[in-house]
Image 1 (tube, each protein chain N blue to C red):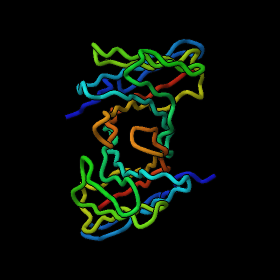
Image 2: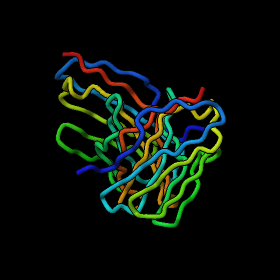
Image 3: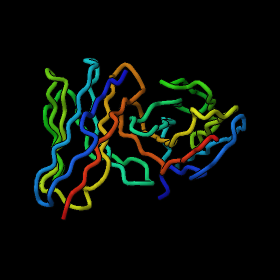
Amino acid sequence: NAGVTQTPKFRILKIGQSMTLQCAQDMNHNYMYWYRQDPGMGLKLIYYSVGAGITDKGEVPNGYNVSRSTTEDFPLRLELAAPSQTSVYFCASSITTNEKLFFGSGTQLSVL
Amino acid sequence: DQQVKQNSPSLSVQEGRISILNCDYTNSMFDYFLWYKKYPAEGPTFLISISSIKDKNEDGRFTVFLNKSAKHLSLHIVPSQPGDSAVYFCAASGNTGNQFYFGTGTSLTVIP
């Protein structure tokens, strides 16, 4: 039972590079989320999706893009990496809104 | 602005004693509260939740108390065990949105 799977676990980017953080869940959850956690801070919502084809911005969406072509996958795209995007990124899913979140193990990203 | 606050970054407790972790919130529209536990290099895992229609919820060694008038909730762990050593996050949501707001976390160390 894999749950929520994130890849890669670690990545170093140079300023201006782009990359995609992958997230997949096998629980048939409609809701999926991307959070970032900066040192000493709580998790901040970047984007979320309530189902395939539907995405919406969270608290800190600038510099990111998402897509949701299937129920299972919710990739997060960084187009022009900046040092401010150095963070730990968590993908999560839930059955519906206001239900407990199931988190992946995170991606530690450094932009230098 | 941090809508959910955990003012104690760390807490140390002797094994067998009670651990009390506190959380305050500012938004009176929040009606669902959760606690998550996080080990290093892992994603947060759900621990316990409480709805605003209740003031207490218990699950084994874990009890969450909600004081709506004070906008305060607490997590009690009795008895504390070394395996409880982790970072604990509280989170809150309201029925008008799809977002959970997280506190900054409290690092609990249970000393054998």
